[in-house]
Amino acid sequence: MKKFFSMMAVIAAMFAFASCETTPADGVTPEVTKLATPVVEIVDVTETGFTAKWAAVEGATSYAISTNIPDQKLVNTSETSYKFENLNKGEYTVRVKASGEGKEDSDFSEVKKVTLTGATSADWFTQTVALVEDNAENRAIGRYTFNAVDFVWKGTGVKELFYGMFETESIASMSDDEIISNMQYSLDGEMLAEVNSAEGFARSFTGLQGSTSYTLCALATNEAGVKYLAKGSVTTTETQLTDQAKAWIGTWTAKSTEILAWVTVQDEDINGDEVVDENDAYTDLQVQAGEIPYELAITPYPGYTDVAFIDGLSVWGADMPNLAFFVIGDQGQNYLVVTNGTIIDENYGIEWATVCEINGYTGIPDGTLSFVGGGYETFIFELTDNGEVVCEMGAGYLNEEKTATYDAVSTDVYVANGNSYYLYGEDANEDGALGDDEVFTEYHAGAITDFVKTADEVQTSSVRKAAHAMPLKSNIGSSVIVK
Image (cartoon, rainbow, N blue to C red; front, side, top):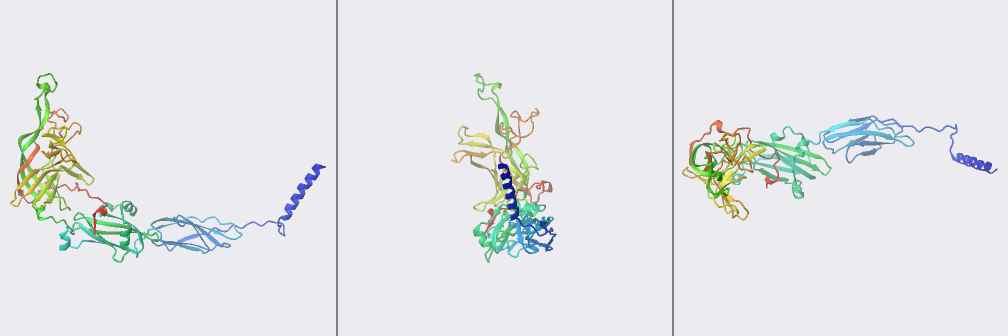
């Protein structure tokens, strides 16, 4: 009996639940209609925008638009089109689905793609680039048409600006994205305020080389987030050397009356056997008498007013001309400052060790000849008013306290092995290796004398090879912007 009443209770509950449901008159539950999938078109494409449109879907009251636009991933509208604006360069995707009351949402439409160029012009930002004006005021401060460019950035609502000054050739094969990735400089708040002022941001790039095309690139972003890449190119004029520099250009003859050589010495009991003999022999670097003739060709580096190369001074020959600089002294002296190095190409240079006399250095006897590496002056030539050339050897300090000094003795001794300090040169003893047992002669040493100009012209064979290039940053930064 107990089981019977339990079953009756379950049946009663089921009947009560069923009685709460609404049953259609015909007893059949209707199916929910799924909306048709919209068919999307991309129309009215511009540099910075496009419109997505579709035919109305029967029963739809709204549409959801899915995109890859960062701040518009999902957009809802009751219209049958939607306009996307203020977009930057890139590929954009769009798909749409329909929704309606009492209806099942449609599937998303097929993905539509559109590629925009981004703004190639802008009414909210302008850039002008031009050579500096050739006038007395500019020339007085060293600004010439071969080394300086003026520019103005002027905008409305510019909130960000990145820039780079490039040699045009260096970016010729780059895409805009690659150029932008190489921009290392930007303007701060005060400078941006100048950009957005009535006068604009006006500055100059200086320190450029002559006869070279440059392109100034500026990536401006406005308050709507639109980016615009402005480009402006200008070609500097041919470099104009000063009269002082021109006086150095040409071929010269000169000589040195000292050479460097490794000399065998046995003047103390090295091995401690109380006898000074061949077992105590060692090699020592010494300066000896010996004349070295020079046939020199001095040429300016194209595009620069203060850089020169000297062929014939380096023992490494024409491929290793010494790098030098034209310098005007405080009293108007006309100097040619010669370094212990050269430029191989735009990315690589080399400096060689020079034999110097060391004094005041703890642990080293005064007067010791030793190798000193690094870039510094080794020869300083002065061309006097009467046409004579006076040579001074380079000198400097080896410590911050300026108690240890060096005086250059030579400009053409090389270190092949930084630990052993072997002279880099010929295998004099023909043992197949360069070592301190070589006997070297005719290594440059001592001041150069009898420095006489033989011609104002330089033979083509002596001119710096075109493949060798002075290094210049492709992206010239704010350090050379002057107001």
